[in-house]
Length: 142
Image (tube, rainbow, N blue to C red; front, side, top):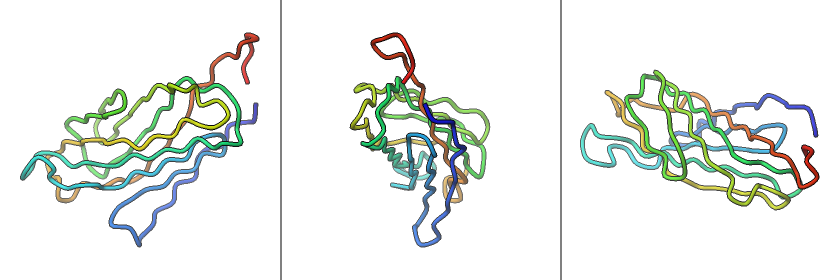
């Protein structure tokens, strides 16, 4: 197994809003604003969370954990592909890897609904993704 390398976060000013994080080990993640005030005025914003597990990396990954930091406190969040927890301005989404992300990846493109007091100015500051390694059939880690 390779040594963990802390992800690099890049901001792209050419996008309406978006943060792209690349892990040196196994995942890349992009979080972009999909729809403001999706449920009507002052309700929630929808964000698209896109994650890719590369095809050339073969190991067992039981789940991915994405940590998204916003510019203000979040009151609640719902992730359509797993669990979401909120602590201040940080949302952590956890998604089980149904294909074990072995060999050809277990990519996802999911919706995150975020509730906050001021949705018009809510934006993503950073995003980081990691995977949890599981044991292989021989009982060892890949």
